[in-house]
Image (cartoon, rainbow, N blue to C red; front, side, top):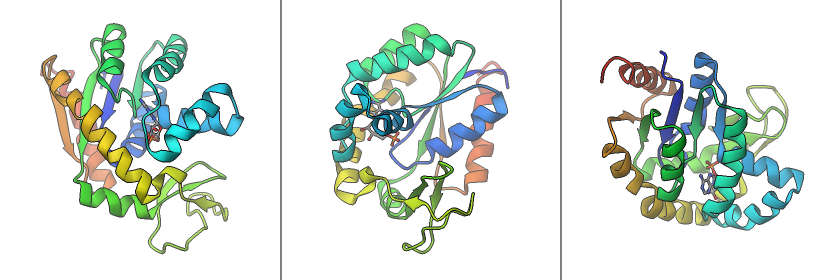
Length: 213
Ligand code: AMP
């Protein structure tokens, strides 16, 4: 696998973060989760975090200008390959990234809306080790990754925020599929499968992109 710039696209809770992390480890490149980066800025109480919080909590996209500045700084320090998780999400973001990395491999995780709602209800983040997990019992607070009693729901995983996030996704992110199809091959992976199977297909898609596809 020598494709070192990979863009993972898909609706909220389609598994981008989980797949991006594994792929980044395997390829030995960093992974940029813009949502994660924004949550870290909120935690720090930085100016970017203060601006982003209202947008994120209500499920709206953070303005392109803010995102592009943040990603531009990150890309300046990470020039030797990366996995993008949650960026780009709008056409202006995709066009900017295209100027910097015209050779990126684009992979879409397809998951229908009805599955996403179920995932959102069960999704928890561990405030101790940072893992994202799906709980079987909604009252579960113990993290199976690190054992800490630290599982919480993301504030933007409330169903009201999710509705807004999905509407934004339909209106602003789905047009990227046509944009990228017009530039070259886009691989679609069925994201409803077990995570290991999704990962197998994601890695196949990355490999395919390097073998003359
Ligand atoms: P995520 O962790 O990818 O689900 O992102 C959480 C939230 O961060 C999103 O619902 C947006 O409010 C914001 N966000 C993350 N990435 C972007 C982006 N590329 N453009 C605009 N907003 C973003």
